[in-house]
Every structure is written in C-alpha cells, then in structure tokens.
Image (cartoon, rainbow, N blue to C red; front, side, top):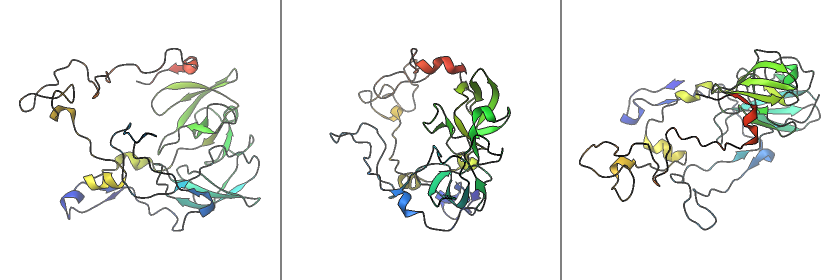
Length: 273
C-alpha cells in the first residue's frame, strides 16, 4: 500500500494501491472498447439506480474469461491496470500470435508462461479442469457451467479453495465461507486474484469518489418523514422503525432475498454467514 503525508486535510488518511509493479506501456488497442455511460438512467431517461454519474472517461478491456485456446502455450507480455475492475489484468500472446487479456493472479510476472489444458502443470496462472486440481489448491475465475467461461472468484484478492472431488462434482469453499458444488468438468485458473490489498484503500476525500463516478449519498436520518422512513425528529433521534428499511420502505436487514425455488440451491452445501 502507498501512504501519503498529511500535507492537506484530504491526504491525512489517504491510502492507495502501489502500482509500481505494473508495466509502463499503453493498453492493446484492438482489445479496447468504449462503453456508453448511462449515469443510472433507463431508456426513458429516468434515474433507476441512484448515486451514479460523472467520473473519468475510461475504456473497457475485453477480458477472455474462457481461455478456450486449449494446449496452446502463451507468454505474459504485460501486467496492466483495468479501470473497470478491482483486479489487475495480464496481456498474453499465444504461440499462434493471438493476443488476449486475462485476470492476473497474484505472483504472475512478465515473461511467465501460462497454458489452458486438462494436463497443464499445477502452476499459478495455468487453467485446468477442476477434477485435475488436487484438494487444498486455490483457484479463481471458476466456471459454473462447462464452456461458459469463468463466472465466480474474479474480484481483487478473491479465490476458491478445492475441498473435495467426487461423483462428478468438486466442492469449493468461497471467500465468503459458502461451500458450493460445481461440475468437475468446469475449468478454473490456479492461484489467487491479484491486488489483494484493494480492500485497504481509503478514499480520503469526496472528490475521489466523484472521479470514480459515485455521486453523493444522503443519509435517510437527515431527511424529512415524507422522504424516508428514518426521517424527522429533533436532533439525532433513533430510527423509529423496528427493521432497517430502504427509501421505499422495503426491509433490508436480515431479510432473505434468494429465490427459494432457484435450481442451484441444491448445489450449495453451506450458506455464507
């Protein structure tokens, strides 16, 4: 982590990730895409998601979550910053000349070789089927259905731990503590996702949130009773409602939101706390 001297009030507690390990090169243009900003508006122009808007302009990096080039070794050309995600990304070039962006695992360096194969070595960055990865290994970018591409354990510092392989399924322990069964023919990459210190970042000032496209959030307790269930009262008053609620009066704390009839519930062995 990078810490700053308190030269101004906003820098007093400011912290940031140290980007010194990233490659000092421009991103690969053929894999860049401009995404239109909607600032939380729907097709009618009405705000449906609050507190979004503004922020620096940014280009989306097209990440290859499938890595479908099987048995073709690739070399890491660069480790780069991605403005659309918390993890770092790696630019790789295959033996056939094709280039792609993948999620960079912790410890991957420029010049390292990675490969996606059922019989790949058990090395950080390589991608194998879950049934070929021994118990105790950490994996990321895990598929939930074969061939669909990685869908879970993709954010900075996250990983899933292999607990067991049996009867066509692999038991995975997620970072949240949830234990879930996944078909063992699904692919997963070995290692923990890069930038594990992301959760230690202190924004430091309101302006930095605006750079990220986050607009101000007003607390319900300082509103009037007509505007929020927490509103009204003299000075700092209690909530006045037994359960925590949203602006529209919907219960948020302790209410289960998962659909009871969801098909994948049978694959969850243990729910997160």
